[in-house]
Image (tube, rainbow, N blue to C red):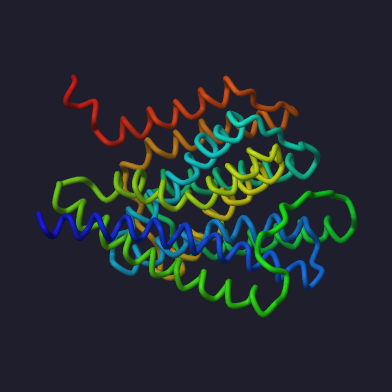
Length: 319
């Protein structure tokens, strides 16, 4: 039992380090970008999305290195569900409104493409090395395309200001410290989660889909709560769409390259269908120019909680 308590402390400490590190890195990178006069659109799509996805990347690489690929796959799939249902649902519940526009529609199409890539690999039972290279290449090409649209003045993007002081002497150390915190948090989270799974006979897939996914989605949730309370839905939407693209096209691709390919357990067939359904629901609304009301946001949150309840097996004892 003492070992279990230590593992739980590892998981909790990992959560704290991931959330704090993600916040420090995003805020520091934001200030650096502003000091270098980089386009707000490019900063928003790359810095915020990539910054808040770093916990997933750290967890995925650590999991693959520990021969626990189910945690990596489960963490990404679960995080994408959490992003669209919990994070965007929270934004809607708080009354935040998205700005819409061509940028959101373009990113919505990117989410569809990324989800299609992941579906092919899940149903195929493997993310091969070549598949990782192709996805990473596509992500880089999309970032270049987004940058080209930004410098051409085709897009407008409102980016949340940072609470961090604007001078580079603070911003650079914040990025370094944030990155170190993220990697340490990932190690603690993966090690603790894996040990808990072995102790209680819970599969690594379920641990990845629940504990790891929720923990690595905390940076996105934190950004969304702040944006929602301030009525800035565009920040939340851009962050979530960018993070979901990065999770699949960036994190899974890098993890597969790092591991020389990743075997995907057949159990994830159920979960990729959930990702397709939830992402499809949100993307369809954005493509049609629709927004989410508070009641719809509440329903999205309830749906996510129900999904987590089902995965945790709490209902098994009631049947």
